Image 1 (cartoon, rainbow, N blue to C red):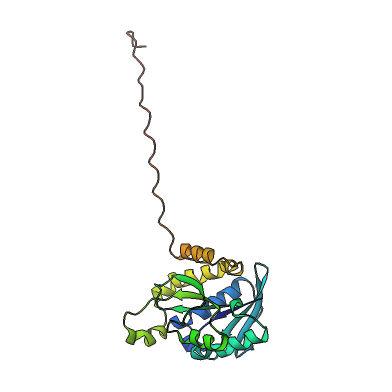
Image 2: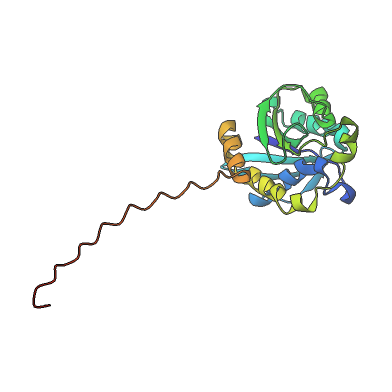
Length: 215
């Protein structure tokens, strides 16, 4: 079994925040694969289902972002899951909007939710980093992540990314992170169409000779 965790803050006031893209991703995964109903457990909401034949427990911690590790650690300990069986979906400031990167282990990169999970679980878990872009000024980061996606984003790359992450989730269960990243990237940033090949030149027209009697 794998534990899929989406990070965010609970409550309707945070629902559309950039910081909640992890919640958005895990909600879409549960919807696409027909997971069971969400129920309260492990200081969060959980839903169970199967992806490509593998059992998955989806978890949305309700401890608020900075204490996410309390919920994740409790669930992992209950099911006796090693950190490498835990996949965490979350927002990444240092990736351009719509980009995705997957890695196992590493630092928290200034993300308080990841820092909390490191403290409760260790850092050898899989991180699915969903790019939201950077406001360009460190002093604006707090307000930026806790503000809603702009209308153009909500009607553009955000649903495309979330849908692609869900559709390509089987690659994560297969351990093929490269395929997952490639397919998601292709969906969000499709390559330009190849130019059409020029048509071959038409064959020259040969006129029939005219006889002397005009026939």
